[in-house]
Image (tube, rainbow, N blue to C red; front, side):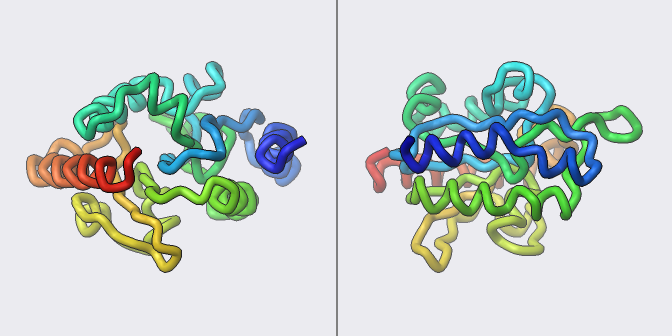
Length: 199
């Protein structure tokens, strides 16, 4: 068994959050080869992702792939050649009020951290695209989306990071014209990096 296969088997078998009492639906959701140059990191799978076993499979995914298409990637090729994962790997369940999905707690994120760290180590992406506030803060610290969406940054390991907001249709953040302009700038950065990195 290769290192990626071993990691993926561990992720699929993991029950740490359930054992700690968190009401998740077990079953890690991720995709892509370890040879990928680009890694998309979301917050956590939604219910449609959990059912299909595929990241960004629902309405949010359709908007994300519209953004990626504007940068020059078609969905089929991107899914086959690049890596997609999340800060936490399993569906966390509905929010208490029943509106949207529950945001994974810091404790759940901590339980999943070794998996994301190992994914990063094995894939060694040249470009990371964190999607949504939780994922953006995982890579950039306690920042506001308006401060970083529309920028391209390089981390101490030399990896490019281009943050995106959560593409959910329920996201009020995207209702503001200035925020949609920030997304446009982010797409421009992705388009240029796709050419520069040859991905």
